[in-house]
Length: 328
Image (cartoon, rainbow, N blue to C red; front, top):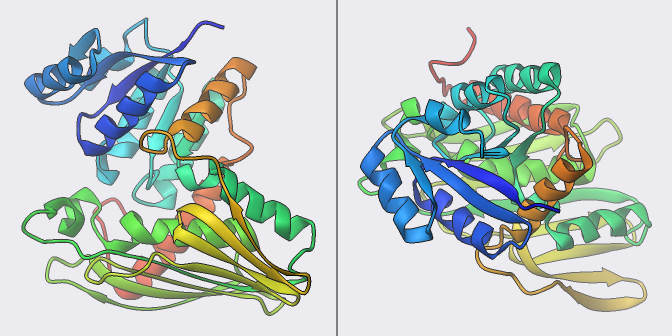
Protein backbone atom coordinates (compact mmCIF):
# COMPACT_ATOMS: atom_id res chain seq x y z
CA UNK A 1 0.00 0.00 0.00
CA UNK A 2 1.07 3.56 -0.63
CA UNK A 3 2.40 5.30 2.50
CA UNK A 4 -0.02 7.50 4.45
CA UNK A 5 1.01 11.13 3.85
CA UNK A 6 0.85 13.20 7.02
CA UNK A 7 0.51 16.90 7.54
CA UNK A 8 1.76 18.06 10.94
CA UNK A 9 -0.11 21.06 12.28
CA UNK A 10 2.18 22.64 14.86
CA UNK A 11 5.95 22.72 15.18
CA UNK A 12 6.54 22.34 18.93
CA UNK A 13 8.14 19.63 21.02
CA UNK A 14 5.40 16.99 20.77
CA UNK A 15 5.17 17.53 17.00
CA UNK A 16 8.92 16.95 16.69
CA UNK A 17 8.78 13.71 18.69
CA UNK A 18 5.79 12.42 16.74
CA UNK A 19 7.39 13.49 13.44
CA UNK A 20 10.58 11.64 14.29
CA UNK A 21 8.57 8.44 14.82
CA UNK A 22 6.70 9.02 11.57
CA UNK A 23 10.03 8.99 9.72
CA UNK A 24 10.68 5.52 11.13
CA UNK A 25 7.21 4.20 10.25
CA UNK A 26 7.37 2.20 7.00
CA UNK A 27 3.70 2.89 6.24
CA UNK A 28 3.87 6.66 6.64
CA UNK A 29 5.59 9.75 5.27
CA UNK A 30 5.49 13.43 6.26
CA UNK A 31 4.22 15.57 3.40
CA UNK A 32 4.13 18.99 5.07
CA UNK A 33 4.27 20.92 8.33
CA UNK A 34 2.63 24.22 9.30
CA UNK A 35 3.00 26.75 12.09
CA UNK A 36 1.77 30.29 12.58
CA UNK A 37 5.42 31.29 12.36
CA UNK A 38 6.56 30.35 8.86
CA UNK A 39 10.20 30.46 9.89
CA UNK A 40 9.58 27.99 12.67
CA UNK A 41 7.77 25.66 10.29
CA UNK A 42 10.64 25.90 7.78
CA UNK A 43 13.20 25.11 10.49
CA UNK A 44 11.12 22.09 11.59
CA UNK A 45 10.90 20.90 7.99
CA UNK A 46 14.64 21.28 7.57
CA UNK A 47 15.43 19.21 10.64
CA UNK A 48 13.14 16.32 9.63
CA UNK A 49 13.54 16.55 5.87
CA UNK A 50 9.89 17.47 5.28
CA UNK A 51 9.39 18.64 1.67
CA UNK A 52 6.98 21.54 2.35
CA UNK A 53 6.34 23.98 5.16
CA UNK A 54 3.62 26.59 5.57
CA UNK A 55 3.13 29.70 7.65
CA UNK A 56 -0.63 29.14 7.80
CA UNK A 57 -2.72 26.18 8.90
CA UNK A 58 -5.18 26.63 6.04
CA UNK A 59 -2.47 26.03 3.46
CA UNK A 60 -1.60 22.76 5.17
CA UNK A 61 -5.15 21.39 5.30
CA UNK A 62 -5.70 22.36 1.66
CA UNK A 63 -2.54 20.57 0.49
CA UNK A 64 -3.71 17.83 -1.88
CA UNK A 65 -0.73 15.66 -0.96
CA UNK A 66 -1.80 15.45 2.70
CA UNK A 67 -3.90 12.38 3.60
CA UNK A 68 -4.31 13.02 7.34
CA UNK A 69 -3.57 15.92 9.68
CA UNK A 70 -1.92 15.47 13.06
CA UNK A 71 -2.88 18.40 15.32
CA UNK A 72 -0.11 19.05 17.83
CA UNK A 73 -0.84 22.54 19.13
CA UNK A 74 -2.05 23.61 22.59
CA UNK A 75 -5.40 22.39 23.94
CA UNK A 76 -7.16 25.68 23.32
CA UNK A 77 -6.49 25.51 19.57
CA UNK A 78 -7.58 21.92 18.93
CA UNK A 79 -11.29 22.61 18.40
CA UNK A 80 -10.79 25.31 15.77
CA UNK A 81 -8.00 23.48 13.96
CA UNK A 82 -9.75 20.10 13.91
CA UNK A 83 -12.82 21.74 12.37
CA UNK A 84 -10.59 23.55 9.85
CA UNK A 85 -9.01 20.27 8.74
CA UNK A 86 -12.28 18.32 8.65
CA UNK A 87 -14.01 21.03 6.62
CA UNK A 88 -11.13 20.81 4.15
CA UNK A 89 -11.88 17.09 3.81
CA UNK A 90 -8.94 15.85 5.88
CA UNK A 91 -9.04 13.08 8.51
CA UNK A 92 -7.55 14.12 11.85
CA UNK A 93 -5.52 12.77 14.73
CA UNK A 94 -5.90 15.31 17.54
CA UNK A 95 -3.39 15.41 20.38
CA UNK A 96 -4.71 15.02 23.90
CA UNK A 97 -6.54 16.64 25.48
CA UNK A 98 -8.78 16.37 22.43
CA UNK A 99 -10.44 19.74 23.12
CA UNK A 100 -10.90 22.08 26.07
CA UNK A 101 -14.25 20.59 27.03
CA UNK A 102 -16.86 18.04 26.08
CA UNK A 103 -19.00 20.55 24.17
CA UNK A 104 -16.14 21.29 21.80
CA UNK A 105 -15.42 17.57 21.45
CA UNK A 106 -19.03 16.86 20.46
CA UNK A 107 -18.82 19.52 17.75
CA UNK A 108 -15.63 18.05 16.30
CA UNK A 109 -17.01 14.51 16.42
CA UNK A 110 -20.29 15.61 14.81
CA UNK A 111 -18.36 17.31 11.99
CA UNK A 112 -16.24 14.22 11.37
CA UNK A 113 -19.27 11.93 11.32
CA UNK A 114 -21.27 14.23 9.05
CA UNK A 115 -18.42 14.22 6.55
CA UNK A 116 -17.55 10.54 6.97
CA UNK A 117 -13.97 11.33 7.94
CA UNK A 118 -11.63 9.53 10.31
CA UNK A 119 -11.14 11.23 13.68
CA UNK A 120 -9.22 10.06 16.74
CA UNK A 121 -7.73 11.45 19.93
CA UNK A 122 -3.97 10.92 20.08
CA UNK A 123 -4.18 9.05 23.38
CA UNK A 124 -1.19 6.74 22.95
CA UNK A 125 -2.07 4.87 26.15
CA UNK A 126 -5.18 3.32 24.59
CA UNK A 127 -3.23 1.59 21.82
CA UNK A 128 -0.26 0.54 23.97
CA UNK A 129 0.11 -3.29 23.83
CA UNK A 130 0.47 -3.68 27.60
CA UNK A 131 -2.58 -1.56 28.31
CA UNK A 132 -4.51 -3.70 25.86
CA UNK A 133 -3.21 -6.78 27.68
CA UNK A 134 -4.60 -5.49 30.97
CA UNK A 135 -8.04 -5.22 29.40
CA UNK A 136 -7.70 -8.82 28.21
CA UNK A 137 -6.75 -9.97 31.73
CA UNK A 138 -9.86 -8.29 33.07
CA UNK A 139 -12.09 -9.82 30.38
CA UNK A 140 -10.61 -13.27 31.04
CA UNK A 141 -11.47 -12.96 34.74
CA UNK A 142 -7.89 -13.50 35.97
CA UNK A 143 -8.37 -10.88 38.68
CA UNK A 144 -11.84 -12.06 39.63
CA UNK A 145 -14.23 -9.15 39.90
CA UNK A 146 -12.50 -5.80 39.51
CA UNK A 147 -12.87 -3.78 42.71
CA UNK A 148 -10.91 -0.63 42.07
CA UNK A 149 -8.12 1.34 40.45
CA UNK A 150 -5.56 3.72 41.93
CA UNK A 151 -3.68 5.87 39.45
CA UNK A 152 -1.40 8.88 39.82
CA UNK A 153 0.31 10.99 37.20
CA UNK A 154 2.09 14.03 38.63
CA UNK A 155 5.08 16.15 37.70
CA UNK A 156 6.54 19.41 38.97
CA UNK A 157 6.39 22.13 36.32
CA UNK A 158 8.19 25.47 36.41
CA UNK A 159 5.78 28.42 36.02
CA UNK A 160 8.54 30.50 34.42
CA UNK A 161 9.53 27.87 31.87
CA UNK A 162 6.31 25.89 31.33
CA UNK A 163 4.13 28.96 30.88
CA UNK A 164 1.48 27.17 28.82
CA UNK A 165 0.56 24.80 31.63
CA UNK A 166 -0.34 27.69 33.93
CA UNK A 167 -2.15 29.77 31.30
CA UNK A 168 -5.96 29.42 31.31
CA UNK A 169 -6.12 30.90 27.79
CA UNK A 170 -4.06 27.94 26.56
CA UNK A 171 -6.15 25.38 28.45
CA UNK A 172 -3.58 25.05 31.22
CA UNK A 173 -3.96 23.02 34.38
CA UNK A 174 -3.06 19.61 35.74
CA UNK A 175 -6.30 17.90 34.69
CA UNK A 176 -6.02 18.39 30.93
CA UNK A 177 -2.28 17.79 30.78
CA UNK A 178 -1.91 14.98 33.32
CA UNK A 179 -5.26 13.91 34.76
CA UNK A 180 -6.61 12.98 31.35
CA UNK A 181 -4.41 9.86 31.43
CA UNK A 182 -5.52 8.24 34.72
CA UNK A 183 -9.13 9.24 34.05
CA UNK A 184 -8.90 7.59 30.62
CA UNK A 185 -7.41 4.49 32.23
CA UNK A 186 -10.29 4.35 34.72
CA UNK A 187 -12.80 4.73 31.88
CA UNK A 188 -11.06 2.01 29.88
CA UNK A 189 -10.99 -0.52 32.73
CA UNK A 190 -14.12 0.35 34.74
CA UNK A 191 -16.33 2.29 32.34
CA UNK A 192 -18.39 5.43 32.91
CA UNK A 193 -18.70 6.28 36.62
CA UNK A 194 -22.00 7.02 38.31
CA UNK A 195 -20.53 9.82 40.41
CA UNK A 196 -17.43 11.99 40.70
CA UNK A 197 -16.05 13.48 43.91
CA UNK A 198 -13.24 16.02 43.68
CA UNK A 199 -10.77 17.86 45.89
CA UNK A 200 -7.82 19.94 44.77
CA UNK A 201 -6.18 23.34 44.52
CA UNK A 202 -5.90 26.25 42.11
CA UNK A 203 -2.94 28.49 41.39
CA UNK A 204 -2.74 32.26 41.15
CA UNK A 205 -3.61 32.16 37.43
CA UNK A 206 -6.83 30.25 38.17
CA UNK A 207 -5.87 26.86 36.72
CA UNK A 208 -5.95 23.62 38.70
CA UNK A 209 -2.62 22.65 40.23
CA UNK A 210 -3.70 19.42 41.93
CA UNK A 211 -6.81 17.30 41.64
CA UNK A 212 -7.88 14.17 43.48
CA UNK A 213 -10.90 12.43 41.95
CA UNK A 214 -12.87 9.54 43.36
CA UNK A 215 -14.98 7.91 40.68
CA UNK A 216 -17.84 5.88 42.10
CA UNK A 217 -19.82 3.11 40.38
CA UNK A 218 -23.29 1.79 41.16
CA UNK A 219 -21.90 -1.69 41.88
CA UNK A 220 -19.47 -0.42 44.50
CA UNK A 221 -16.29 -0.24 42.42
CA UNK A 222 -14.12 2.85 42.81
CA UNK A 223 -11.29 4.57 40.97
CA UNK A 224 -9.00 6.91 42.87
CA UNK A 225 -7.26 9.29 40.49
CA UNK A 226 -4.67 11.92 41.37
CA UNK A 227 -2.73 14.43 39.32
CA UNK A 228 -0.55 17.38 40.20
CA UNK A 229 1.51 19.93 38.30
CA UNK A 230 3.45 20.92 41.43
CA UNK A 231 4.66 17.59 42.81
CA UNK A 232 6.56 14.51 41.70
CA UNK A 233 5.22 10.96 41.73
CA UNK A 234 6.22 7.49 40.49
CA UNK A 235 3.46 7.65 37.80
CA UNK A 236 1.90 4.65 39.54
CA UNK A 237 -1.19 2.59 38.76
CA UNK A 238 -2.65 -0.45 40.54
CA UNK A 239 -5.73 -2.39 39.44
CA UNK A 240 -7.26 -4.58 42.15
CA UNK A 241 -9.72 -7.44 41.99
CA UNK A 242 -11.24 -10.10 44.21
CA UNK A 243 -8.67 -12.67 43.05
CA UNK A 244 -5.59 -10.61 42.27
CA UNK A 245 -4.03 -7.35 41.16
CA UNK A 246 -2.00 -5.78 38.38
CA UNK A 247 0.69 -3.19 39.02
CA UNK A 248 1.86 -1.01 36.14
CA UNK A 249 5.65 -0.80 36.06
CA UNK A 250 7.27 2.36 34.79
CA UNK A 251 4.98 5.14 33.62
CA UNK A 252 1.30 4.31 34.11
CA UNK A 253 0.35 5.77 30.73
CA UNK A 254 3.23 4.07 28.91
CA UNK A 255 4.24 1.05 31.03
CA UNK A 256 7.36 -1.04 30.49
CA UNK A 257 5.91 -4.12 32.19
CA UNK A 258 3.01 -5.45 34.24
CA UNK A 259 3.27 -7.34 37.52
CA UNK A 260 0.31 -9.72 37.78
CA UNK A 261 -0.47 -11.32 41.16
CA UNK A 262 -3.11 -14.05 41.46
CA UNK A 263 -3.67 -17.18 43.54
CA UNK A 264 -1.49 -19.02 41.01
CA UNK A 265 1.47 -16.83 41.90
CA UNK A 266 3.13 -13.71 40.60
CA UNK A 267 4.45 -13.10 37.11
CA UNK A 268 5.75 -10.20 35.09
CA UNK A 269 4.56 -9.43 31.59
CA UNK A 270 6.97 -7.43 29.48
CA UNK A 271 6.09 -5.71 26.24
CA UNK A 272 7.89 -5.11 22.99
CA UNK A 273 10.75 -2.60 23.26
CA UNK A 274 9.71 0.99 22.77
CA UNK A 275 10.63 2.25 19.33
CA UNK A 276 11.75 5.85 19.09
CA UNK A 277 9.53 8.07 21.23
CA UNK A 278 6.81 5.44 21.60
CA UNK A 279 4.28 6.77 19.07
CA UNK A 280 4.72 3.81 16.72
CA UNK A 281 1.61 1.94 17.92
CA UNK A 282 -0.52 5.04 17.59
CA UNK A 283 0.77 5.67 14.07
CA UNK A 284 0.13 2.04 13.11
CA UNK A 285 -3.47 2.27 14.38
CA UNK A 286 -4.16 5.36 12.25
CA UNK A 287 -2.58 3.69 9.21
CA UNK A 288 -4.72 0.59 9.74
CA UNK A 289 -7.94 2.60 10.12
CA UNK A 290 -7.30 4.75 7.06
CA UNK A 291 -6.43 1.77 4.86
CA UNK A 292 -9.60 0.01 6.05
CA UNK A 293 -11.74 3.08 5.37
CA UNK A 294 -12.73 3.29 9.05
CA UNK A 295 -13.89 6.62 10.41
CA UNK A 296 -13.16 5.73 14.02
CA UNK A 297 -10.72 3.54 15.95
CA UNK A 298 -12.21 0.67 17.93
CA UNK A 299 -9.34 1.09 20.39
CA UNK A 300 -10.04 4.80 20.97
CA UNK A 301 -13.79 5.32 20.48
CA UNK A 302 -14.88 8.92 20.14
CA UNK A 303 -17.69 8.49 22.65
CA UNK A 304 -15.05 7.53 25.22
CA UNK A 305 -13.09 10.68 24.40
CA UNK A 306 -16.21 12.77 24.98
CA UNK A 307 -17.06 10.89 28.19
CA UNK A 308 -13.60 11.47 29.69
CA UNK A 309 -13.88 15.19 28.92
CA UNK A 310 -17.27 15.25 30.66
CA UNK A 311 -15.56 13.96 33.80
CA UNK A 312 -12.77 16.53 33.47
CA UNK A 313 -15.36 19.28 32.89
CA UNK A 314 -17.16 18.25 36.06
CA UNK A 315 -13.92 18.15 38.05
CA UNK A 316 -12.86 21.61 36.84
CA UNK A 317 -16.29 23.01 37.61
CA UNK A 318 -16.15 21.69 41.17
CA UNK A 319 -12.68 23.18 41.62
CA UNK A 320 -13.82 26.54 40.24
CA UNK A 321 -11.61 26.38 37.14
CA UNK A 322 -13.19 27.93 34.05
CA UNK A 323 -12.04 28.48 30.49
CA UNK A 324 -13.54 31.11 28.22
CA UNK A 325 -14.80 28.29 25.99
CA UNK A 326 -16.83 26.68 28.79
CA UNK A 327 -20.60 26.97 28.78
CA UNK A 328 -22.18 28.93 31.61
